[in-house]
Image 1 (cartoon, one colour):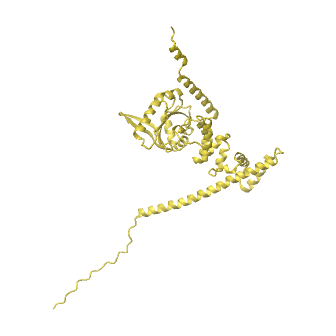
Image 2 (tube, one colour; image 1 turned 135 degrees about the vertical axis):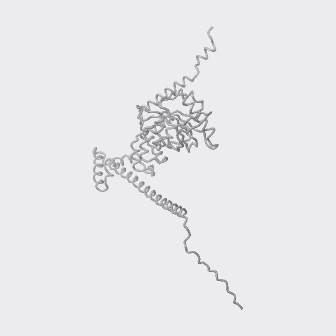
Image 3 (cartoon, one colour; image 1 turned 180 degrees about the vertical axis):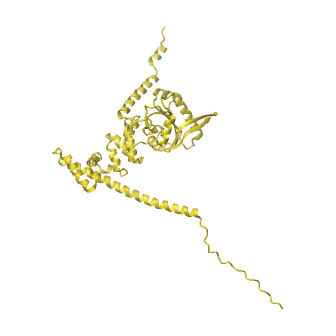
Length: 379
């Protein structure tokens, strides 16, 4: 009897020892997240260390200024004693601590204490270089304004210097009464209404164009885009650039808005049109059309109406008043300058503008003599 053959045994393959393929994209993403987490820790630590060093430096310079002033007052019977204090300290401190304690810096420390006699009034967010810039502003209300804005807008010292040189406080104060100027000095530039976005004039010295040379609107536009960071600083708080030469089509005809921004504080589009030369009523009518289009077609229900600003080199208050509807709060005309103005120049322009406004007001008033002549015609 034949033996039954056992079926061949199935060979069981051992489990594979080869590693599973690595998802490199996932690993890279985790490493990237880890890097940013570590970097954030180090940046935060560095920022806190810098803030601590800066605060200690500013407070120590205030203390140095205090002891210099107090020693000067103790020896005030000798006319040359104050100068000898600075000279002696400067010579010895530079030997021990370096060039940061030359005569100029010691005089700044002295002036710092005199300008801020209460140490608690010193802002910890500002560096010593900020305060050196602020000390060259003589008017107390202007200095208070620049100090508040440097903190609120986080200006670098270079930005602070530029705003001081462009007389930002004086330009914003032009359209305010006494109470408004005091509030501006105390709180800084607060944006509550569309008119708060407008300066007259805007200063565009950074564009690199000269007012006595021939240029076109396209040249000015290119210059502003090339120096967009500088232009945003001049425009003020809350601005974000949206685009240039934005096209709108009406009835098959194309129109182009020079520059479009969005302001997060007013929650509205801000349309800018650039004009070389004198403002015309056609310029304002065109801006009215742009604003109407953006309001009806592009503004969301939870946003505020768009704002239009026509920038020009010259304008007539009469043209602005009668080309725009009464109660207008959306369209503005402002001059621009391609150089840093002097305070005297701004004051002279303010005087001319006030005289022109008064003249326009007189033109708009009814003539009582004319009414009387109508009531009593000649026989």
